[in-house]
Image (cartoon, rainbow, N blue to C red; front, side, top):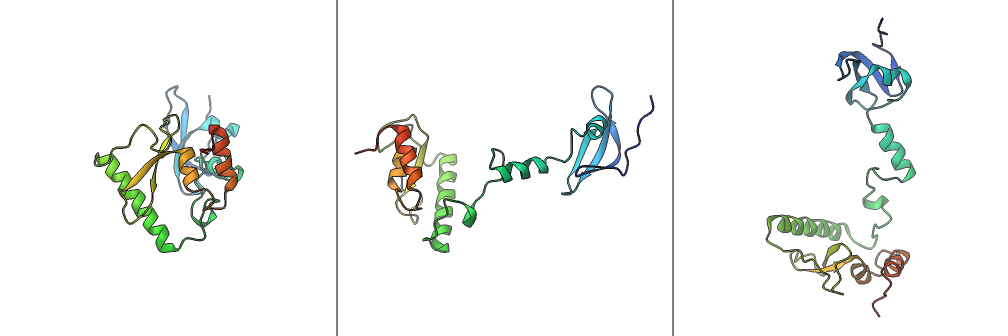
Amino acid sequence: MRRRQLAGETFGRLKAREPHGQDKQGRLMWLCVCACGTRKRVPSRHLIQGRTRSCGCLKKENAAANGKKGAPRISGARSHFFDRTRTEADRVRHVLARRRLHAAVRAGDVAKPDACSGCGGSERGIQAHHEDYSRPLDVVWLCTTCHAQRHPFVRGKEWYVRALIAEGGDDGR
């Protein structure tokens, strides 16, 4: 059987460079370079049939465009949770406090409880709530619903808090 020479051909975002060994079934693999610069080994039949068109960057871009899981996280000023009332210094203090707390939890210096200190429930993920970012290890451990109630309208996302409360079935009153 004669093998097709793919060197120099472009398949979607991938450009075939050279043959690069065989897969477990003995089929020819090609070393390809994606338009984003990533190098990837791809079976020749996947290139010819159009099954592989990029190194994976195309899937991530499509996911991000459609708001799907696996998409790059949108953070900072582009996030819908971005609080424009905070100064940049406040944001930095917030991030540094969270990092320091996470490091202390990983090191075992701070114990994360299994139950919420607000309602005593443990069915939801327990989160740390900082009353003061200048004291990063001084936190209150709360479930998602209780934590949302502590920040009811800070970010202008009343719908988010109402949805969490409705999901839990109790508004805490």
